[in-house]
Image (tube, rainbow, N blue to C red; front, side):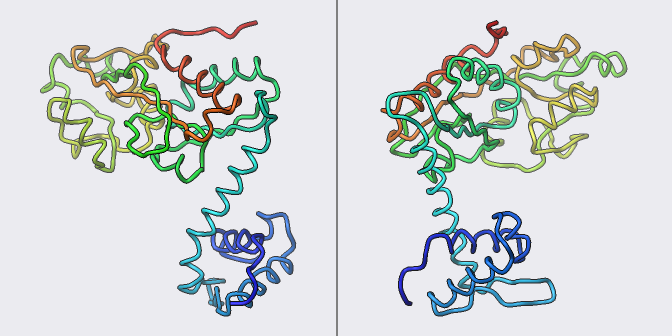
Length: 300
């Protein structure tokens, strides 16, 4: 290998790997195609090996090119985290904070919290990433995360909030058409909405419920938002957060004695706890999500 390659070359490599062609990578980076080609050539020359081969389908990464993807991704996320950290003024709530949250939390709970936060801190910029991955913080893909599982990694600052209740709900129009089940046996005869893939987290959650045969679900999707939308549309009966369902008078709780309780955690990398910006956002999320059953109106 010759001299250490410029970091920008790895950024270009990642774009070509993600996009599959020089032209698409150039568009994503805001560069010209010849510039992207020169970057790839320069990196191959520095490493002394080919990173791509041309095929009928375009550029195909070699084994070496594919093996560099994870390293280039780490460099990209670290660079982004570096820019976010450096974007604020020391001791003030300015700059960018990247938040990771599940789809339902991000759509149903965070917007009013973030609106109030923005009104109090006009120089704050929020990046919202919809994800349930537990390693977002350690990979520095996010600064603060909202999670429904207890974090086990070290180097994280975590605050546990009151658990979130889930229950069976259906739209009133569906129940008017099909009737309301009085027990689990009757429930199993209805159009049920549930997850498609069976994961350890899902199995742990379902263990809290009387047995349900997922193979009998009328609609299977791993998107909690899609499940919620199907419930609201009157497709059938599904699990959703009780606090969310209570906002819609057309949604009815089915078998109210049956409930799941999921923990909720606000998590941040401990290196960020002394920053006024990250600490302010962390506390705002903890306070706002700590009482999700209360409808809050925006301050005028």
